[in-house]
Every structure is written in structure tokens, then in C-alpha cells.
Length: 174
Image (cartoon, rainbow, N blue to C red):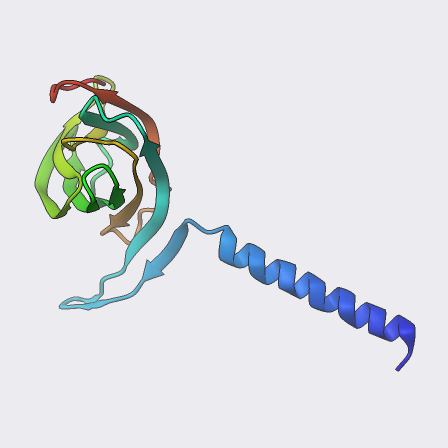
């Protein structure tokens, strides 16, 4: 086989490998997943690893995460935190489910599957965006990522955490 041809084939293989790696590394939005509901197609979107949080500070105990979800978004959304609380030797898995419409936030429940972090509450910021609040008895070497699940086939925005802070009280911060 000719040296030029071998070189070109190797370049093509390297380019394909780079393309494959970029495809695996880039998306945080997995895209629409189709489920069959009672009325036919009922797709939803999941967005993984929308935000990562980590700290070595054991206090303050409350964290507030402001999102880009407006109070008029008319969407049903679940945000999930998954990670590990080393200081308490506990896994983290909790979620906040809510619906926003007409300037109102409707709390549809919080679930705490593992006790390293609690889904403590949610509220609207002073400028009308959803804020979720988390609590843990200690954050010594704690970290987790947020995933978002949206039950609306027409929702095309990327969910984002736009601000985060640790506080010593459970009151509204933003």
C-alpha cells in the first residue's frame, strides 16, 4: 500500500475518533425521549449535568440555587441532585418537582432518596425566577451535579443554575 494512502487513512481515522469523542463529550441535553401516553406521544426532555456544586466548607448548611426558569414558563420540571457527602459518609439523591404558570410557582413535591442532602424547599426570586433550596447537616467535602427533567415536548430552553450561595438560614435569599 502506498505511503500517501496509509497516511490519508490514518488521518481519516484520527478525524473520526475526534468527531466521536466530541459527540460524546459535548451534549448536556440528551434530547426528547418518546414515551407512549394515553393520548399518543408524550415526549419529555432530560438535561444531565446542568450544574456541578462542590464545597469543603462544613457550614453554612443551606444552599440556594437560582435557575433561569421564569414564573411564567408554564412548564412542569423536576430538578435532581446526585452526588456524595463525604463528611457524613452518605450518598446524595434528592429532587424538587414544580410547575410554573402565570407568575406562580406550584410546589409539586420534594423527594429525598438518600440522606446526604435534603431538598429543603423552593421559592420565587424577587425578579420572578425559580430558586431551589437544599440543606445538609454538614457539607465537609460534599459534591453533586444537577439533572433536569422537563415534561413539555415544546420546551427547548436549556435549564441553568444562574446563581448559588450557602447561607445559615432557610429563608429566601434571592
